[in-house]
Image 1: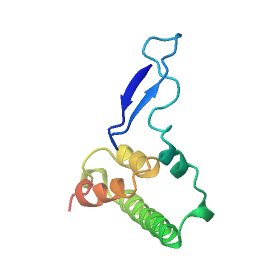
Image 2 (image 1 turned 30 degrees about the vertical axis):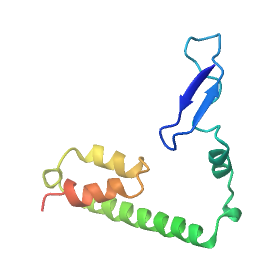
Image 3 (image 1 turned 90 degrees about the vertical axis):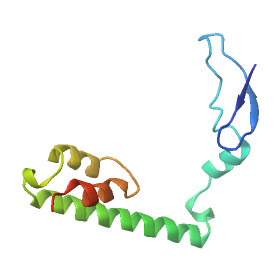
Image 4 (image 1 turned 60 degrees about the vertical axis):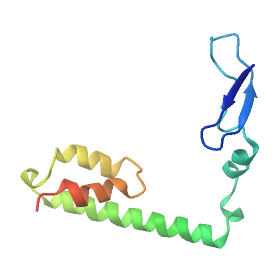
Length: 112
């Protein structure tokens, strides 16, 4: 048995150690906590209207910032961009960053 303390909420939980690999733990200690399991199982219909609104507005802002940043990047010459354009394109198009990648490009990636 292994005692694991969760760094997020300080809960100490005990887990079985497997015999196949030394140090391997059965189950993920950060998902087995009952409160986290309940949060992970919530469906869209179970969320409050305020939470749904926050999610929809956040997603719309992220999509808008991402579209603006990608359009701006496409219209700029490579000399007007800090760093390689392909790297910015990949970060803006692929990485889900909750608006951080588009904001970083718009604030730091462009030369004015």
